[in-house]
Image (cartoon, rainbow, N blue to C red; front, top):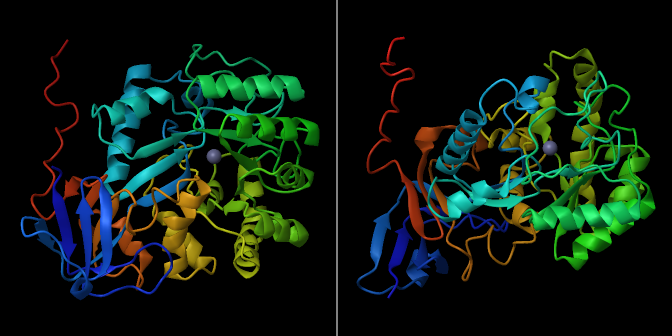
Length: 428
Ligand SMILES: [Zn+2]
């Protein structure tokens, strides 16, 4: 018989956007929530394990809808895996996964670069980490952002990795084959790109288009046929229109959508989610590459205006950081930027819980603290509605549960100090 656990006395923010419930109880049976609400309205078996959490806030486990967990920098040598052994890069990724879970992120959608072995490793308990929804690679045409040819015209010299298939496809038939290839390699979601971006090569910027409508329609149709959603990197110009018309499920970044209010109205009508990823552009404003810096500076005001218009029009918003290229700062940074862009703290929290779960197509499993959902939740010392930035402080992330299992409990014992780096190496 599975155990019943009760989180009692905290203020409940259930992820739906409803008002917080003070002195709440969340009842967990096995891996799912069996009830959540005001404590006085709840009951539980006498042998339940009760945790008294007065003074804290309980939230659904946080979700980052756009991350690149296996990326550790934009430099070409890093991107191509030339500047360190594959094993240290993998272990670095494993550390990122563990740290993210410890900060209350219980689900992350990887938008390209992470292979399916990491998901297997987490599911088998080999390493701690969030639930993963994987794209594997970015499908684009020749010259698009999934094309890894260097600025000097050389093909990628990285070792061929069958778990991360080459992702360039041209023409509807090749695009369909590529979708099937990604699914065969373990993709949970299909990632594509219909524009360049801030960090893409000179000549393929935020408003430069990639893929025809015929290619995108083929991509979306094949993804649907295989039961996969489509996340599409698109910043502005004609490419973002192609993506919306083809019926992708989410527009990633969408920085210049403010220039296309009619397209945004279509997104609202069709439930196409906007994943703004403000964090990455804040980072790009400091980029060492002049063309990246200029693009990021030019787009940021548009990006903020896009977020505001999305709020006005009712375009669903999901929080994503696009972390990886700029390293892995705390994912909750995005919530602070969303608040600066005009969301209330409650709206920002919803974007990282229910909104992100909807973006992933997992809203019946994750994203809210309601009866029947998987028991992924985080207990925070303090009130994130007063200041979402408390979610950046590891000391405040007191308790993290994934599927009803306690993954982090900082109340019990502070985490053991890591071995110091270069701990007594054997001299040579
Ligand atoms: Zn990305």
